[in-house]
Image 1 (cartoon, rainbow, N blue to C red):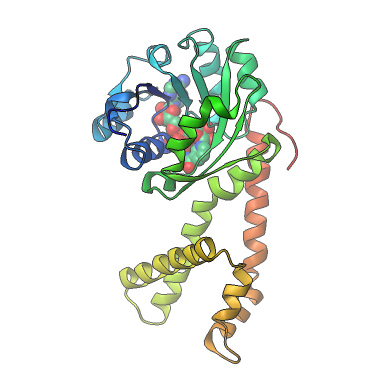
Image 2 (cartoon, rainbow, N blue to C red):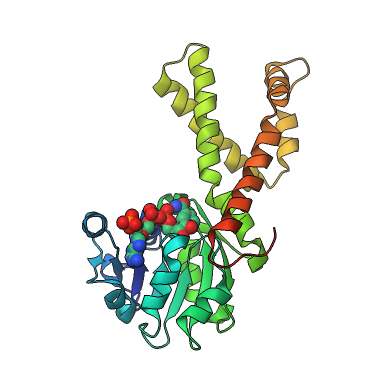
Length: 278
Ligand SMILES: NC(=O)c1ccc[n+]([C@@H]2O[C@H](COP(=O)([O-])OP(=O)(O)OC[C@H]3O[C@@H](n4cnc5c(N)ncnc54)[C@H](OP(=O)(O)O)[C@@H]3O)[C@@H](O)[C@H]2O)c1
């Protein structure tokens, strides 16, 4: 697709998730970096990110909004009211606004941007930068799937893409948005276990991370229930059941469920308007 994208992609906010999405779009959807323009309140960070990725640093939010056919709002939920007020009426005619902010509802973004705003809400995660992301989306009242089909095609090059009801957005934020953080903790803990039984930290981390990757691929590519896959590696009186017993005693399952529920509750509390209950 290099050079084939005739639309300009703009990013307001060039932080963690913007960098992950831009990286994924360039590496996996083959979007030409010259099609991407970004702005950020932190000029130093903007220059660092844009020069690293080879994309254009805009003069400011309004400058980016004027150029972008698709405008990603990748700023923290707390600053969305200010950013939306600034952008009202500034977008390119016919453009699509994609909001990423956790807990900020489509109806709020539409009301803030004005009558004509065509808005989509997405919840991506950082593995998009490696072509292994998840992106959940829902559409505002002035968009349908046909309008964004080409954009979804780009997303699919770097992520599993699912359309969901907006009432589930905070749940996605909690599961796949915050999920990488939970899994890093699991990987680190597995690696610590490896160190405890004699591996060097680097060896233990490599084995732990690859094990999580392999297990995830088994779930996704075989389509089997994880419990069935687990049974297949759990022999009577063997090593795996000994470890599983220890995990059950430690409450790992309950802790992970609690983590997802706590993250969803936090996501609900972040937006400027109260989101629907999970
Ligand atoms: N990180 C994730 O994995 C993830 C996943 C899914 C969704 N999201 C959502 O994506 C949004 C961004 O998250 P993030 O983690 O990328 O945050 P981040 O790393 O803090 O990036 C946001 C950037 O926006 C800048 N900014 C602040 N006010 C601005 C303004 N008025 N105009 C332009 N730029 C401004 C910030 O600068 P300062 O630092 O100077 O304030 C910062 O560089 C959040 O709403 C979050 O809910 C994040």
